[in-house]
Amino acid sequence: MAKKRASTPTVPAAKKAAPQKSAANDFRPVASNRRAHFDYEILERYEAGIALTGTEIKSIRAGKIDLRDAYARASDGEMWLHNAYIAPYDPASLNNHDPRRNRKLLLHRAEILSMTSAAAEKGLTIVALRVYIKRHLAKVELGLARGKRQYDKRRTIIDRDMDREARRSIGASRD
Image (tube, rainbow, N blue to C red; front, side):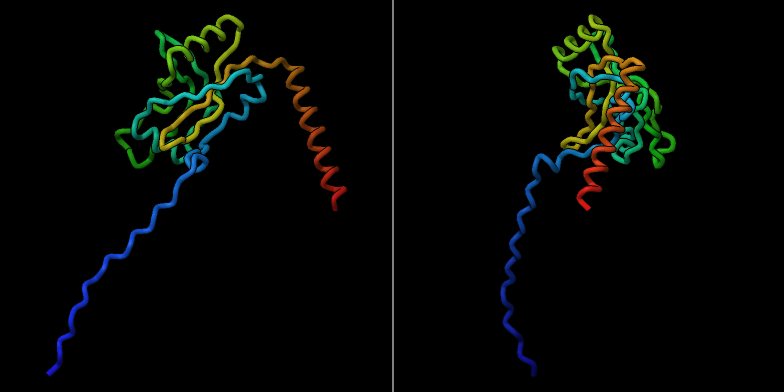
């Protein structure tokens, strides 16, 4: 006859501590408006939240957003993002959003007042510079900007080419 073994009580394994996330891990860039840095001189930067629908945030997390002609404008004490294109979210065929709708920006009242007064007084504009995910929330970086003239743009191109040549010659001298 086979003997029964005495069952030993099982001790649950200790849980491993979850790796601590640092502040650097909570930031994920999604899209940037590179053209804005060429067309405008950025004077001040602001961070704003965006009021989005469910399909819009899913598209943004997938990186399907275009800020090429995006700008912000205040109306009735609220700031709105205009001309930002968020592609329709494919799995949500029927309940999709309008890709070009105006989206409300979440800012403090003092920030809205300072941006709008500076833009109206000095002839500046408010452009969208980039969109990123910060602590699981979509944020947009706005820039208070002054438009560059044609000769300023040419100067930017010349400076960029000179920097590139200098870096290339430094790299060649190392070899």
